[in-house]
Length: 409
Figure 1 (cartoon, rainbow, N blue to C red):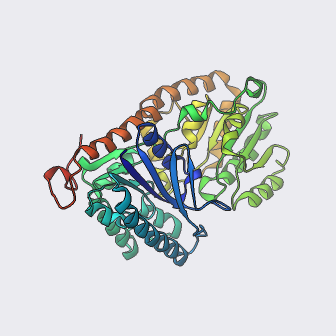
Figure 2 (cartoon, one colour):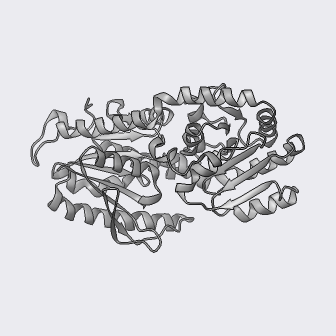
Figure 3 (cartoon, rainbow, N blue to C red):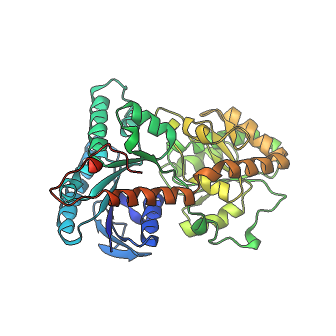
């Protein structure tokens, strides 16, 4: 059986993108290993849905640059040792490295020398992430250094995966050969998501208007913007509610803001819920809300939550961001100006008053989502992996087909 390894500096169980890929490979008949961080109170090694997971206890307590650097290099060293040792035993055909950090792919250099093909899945764009988080200028030496590491990383890879077309175009402009890049969207595994936990008793009450957000509660996701917008609009929306599912550093601040705006009875901070319960919660809401802030990094965001709302048949209130606008028109999503509570408030009232508009948005969003749904992305990913195997050569041999930058179809 052909062996493939995925590497991610994150907890495998809660990384939907890596899990989708790993389980797709298992379903296609591959033996799949994953190197990842250990979850709290988790096991060193375990198996889930046919995927063999090996972990390291490192934690994820980022915030300062020194802490980022420590975690990145500690995980890099561990992954480098593990891949070197395991390559002797399993001779991986393909190693799929998931960023951040970009340079994590260099942990697989020995495996590449032994004949493994390397895939770099660029979950994030590191220079823009750094500019967003630390307010750095694009022409600063730090950002130029990150761009150099980024290019060295995708130069080493045999194939590079990006998460949407706008990011792909950005990286092509920074030197990524178009012939070695493939877009694999953040789509949702519909079989797992919509078929789990939804019952007829949980369907939304047609006489009730509930907006819902589910995910991490951090400033970048703009939940304070949503609360401020609701404060402006709630008197025109009798009976409307805002449900916020999840946990994070913004939870106490959001609760205080709701209290200050006299919305404590209308804003429901549910807290963290199991992933398996999300479909049931979404089935009870009227619309989804994604008030993501816009900056140089977030303009390229395409959140997993968006397709989840779409496949659950919910109209979506969402910031007008570049990557999302690339895929969805104004008649598919209820866009509002990013970082603008007043414009979001207008859209809230608009959807509250017009049930037929909500139905039209749902239908159009499903239509426009069809070309990027997971079944199509899954086949694209499996074709990429299968194509790399076809050009794989024995250690010590070289061929034009296996050289970085040559397209594999």
